[in-house]
Length: 455
Image (cartoon, rainbow, N blue to C red; front, side):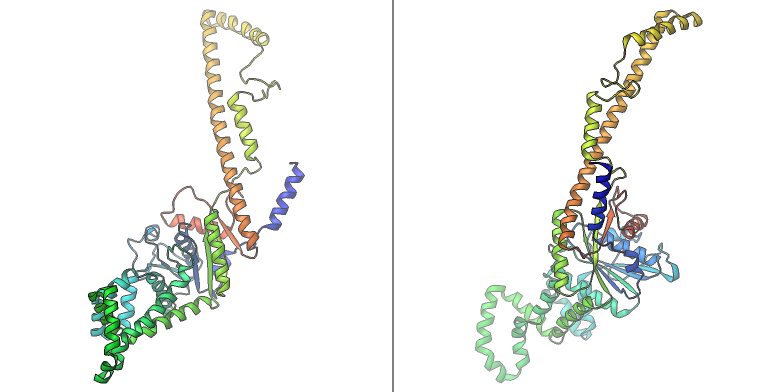
């Protein structure tokens, strides 16, 4: 392609590019109170959430980062010995105008325990916490983690100690679990099954129990076979103790869902430039739109760039093959051929004049001089060969990098063609893992720049 054609192609690509996500503007806006980082697993949600928290705090916001990542990388990168269900101050982050950073890791069982303790008297709370069915429910029931993440978000927002909350969503198998699970658990705890189990206690008295005796005995007999007698007893005891609390679960789930829809909340869909991750991201973008939740944009992590994009993969591979096969053009003589090929006549004339003169001046035998010249020539030839091998290897590495860039660009273009309105911030891939505050700051700078290094 000609130089004019290349410039024209770049201008067209720029015109077709999606709007750039202005991360600093989002962080600096005092109306932004909640940022939710969501997306498929393994795309860097936790790192993105932490980097946003560090950058926002150092720009003057009072920030708390809530993570649900079980790998605990966030604590390590922030220099905190451990994170738990209580926000911890990150001391090494000093922001302008009173900016602060706190961080915490969701403990879903502890959060559930806090709900029980906060909405029942001490005696009833003790009975609930000791109930085997409650212990199973709070530790691993489907949707509990997502529900408790929303519960903790509501608690943090109600305290009003921070002007920005950054949420790292649970590593769900499906992006939809984060939105659906709280409603599912709330429906279960406030559903027909629970109301049926509560019915005997609510009717009360001999007449009520006599009225329900036949029907309940048939139902409990069936449930005993399905669940086991001991489990059914635990469930009934749990239901009786939790009677006054069930309506609150659904109410709080609905309130938090409305909080996510409200002005001041911004969703960032985090992805990687890979087909599966971007398909999940596109699905999430569509779901957020359907639920009328405010989408700020897409963070595209680990994007590769190059400072020599004018050298295409094809040209780099061709140059590498020329070097490896010794067909490179001799730049001094302007002749094509082997790099080490020389004109015997011209070379011997100068060498024959030089060797005897050197021998006469130094008193060294001419044969020794010829040997020294030959050794030196071999050394130069070996050095040239080593340079060629290294250069060819670098050219091939560059070709591979350009192929990766092209593949990522095609994948991103498919997403932006479906969602041209979504603002995008591309974050350049780092050479290693993020394990300290310096690494988080580097990610924050790349988020603010919005384009990969070398692009």
